[in-house]
Image (cartoon, rainbow, N blue to C red; front, side):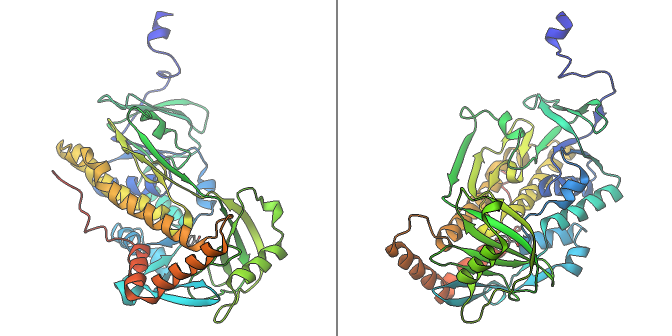
Length: 416
Ligand code: PHB
C-alpha cells in the first residue's frame, strides 16, 4: 500500500525493463521525425513515440509547400532525393482579385523558390530513412505521458502496440505531438506559459480531384464571395481550397456547388478552373496560435505543439523544420559537451521566426479572405490593398521573401 502511494504503478511500471535513449521524442510528424534524423546525423540516438499507425501517418493529407530553406535542409540532411526528383519547383505564384491576376515572381525578386511536395511524402521519406538507419520509431504508442521533465532524469511511460506498458528513460524530451499536443500542457498556464490565440470567422474546405492543372503556378484568389486557392499535387491530381463558413460540413458541399464556387471566385482573364472527379473532401481548421515559452526544464516543444498557423501562408511544416534545425543543434551541444546555452536559448532563438510567420499567415489570410460581415467599403479597401502590394516591387518582394522563407542561416541562435 505504502509502496503504491509513493510509486503509483501507473507511472512507474516495472514489469518490463526500461528502454533507454538520449532523447525521447513524442510524435512522428515533420518535427519529431526530422529531429530524430538530425540527431542521428550527430551520433545521438532517440526513440520516437507515435500514437497513430505508420499507415495513418503516411496517408494523412496535409499542405504541400516547402520553402527553399526546408528543401535545402532536407537535401543537406540526405533525405531530399525523392523530393528533388518528384517535387515541383514553383518560381512564382498568381494573386487574383477584382477579376485580374498579378504574378509574384519569387525567383526574380528573391532568387528563391518553393517546391510543391506534399507533407506526407516528406514523412514517408523520413520514416524510410530512419528505419534504414536503424532508428527506433514506436507506432501505435498509447497513453504517452512525460514524467519529471523538470528534473535531471525525465522518463516517458506509454502502452506499446502490443498493449504492454513501457517506460522510456531519456536525458531530454521533445514534444512534437502536433496541435492536439499533450506535452504542451506540462508547461503550466498561466503560471509559466502564455498562450496567444486567434480564431477566424471562416475555415477552409479542401478537395482533391482527378483533374488537369488549372495553372502551372498556384492561384490565390480573393473575391467578394470569398477566397479560393488552386494548388496541385501531380499532373493529374489537383488540390483546391475554398473559404467556407465555420458551420459548414462536408455534406453542405456537393461536387457541383464546389466547382461553381471555384469558377465564380477564380475564373477571369488568364485563368479558368479545370474540373474533374473529386475524390476527397475535408474541412480544415483555421487559427493562429503560439505558446511561450516553448520549453520547461528538459522538455522542448517543436512544430504545431508550440504554434499553429492558418494555412494561407503554407508555413506549418516549414516552421516545424526550422524549430528542429535549431533544437537538434542545441540538444547536441548539451548531450555531447554539456553546454546548456543552446537549450536555454531555444525559445528566444526560434520565436522571432515563429512570430514573423504568424504575421505573414495572418496578413495573407486577412488580405485575401472576405469576412462574413465585410461591408462594400471593406471589399474595396481590400482590393486596394491587394493592388498596392502586387503593383510595386517593394510589395511583391515582401510577399516573395516571406513566402519562400527567411533564410535559416542568417538567424543563427544566440550562443550567449
Ligand atoms: C496545398 O497545396 O495544400 C497548399 C498550398 C498552398 C497553401 C496552403 C496549402 O497556402
